[in-house]
Length: 161
Image 1 (cartoon, rainbow, N blue to C red):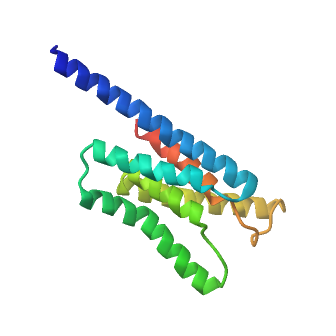
Image 2 (cartoon, rainbow, N blue to C red):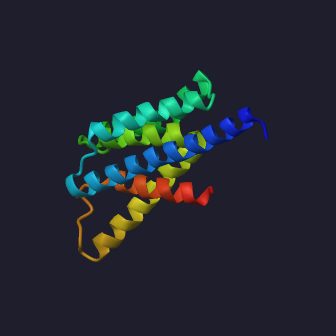
């Protein structure tokens, strides 16, 4: 094996593990703060988006693919949140959830990003209904949706290994 191939292989391994670690730490921090305080701080999501953009550029994704990743996850989340907020006259999806989903979409791509959205929405719905049936929570109470994004993000990551 030539020296160049060794360096490329080493960089690819570092690249994978470094970006995966940032992704998992971002999800863990978002889940923790969302469950504890019902907020996902910008100091978690904005660096996550920055690192995810750098990940896309390092791995050779084009501008059109990056825009597709952003619009299909964070953009979709923003549109759904805006429309449901207008319809229900109250905030339905927080800005932290939108930024978290944008970072997840940049890291995972639009296909896995959309799957994570669907899986997290379904799991949040089921858990809310179960907690309401057990009289542990009212359906009107807010749910920490970032927690479900984080758990489903990790679950999809594990399933794709």
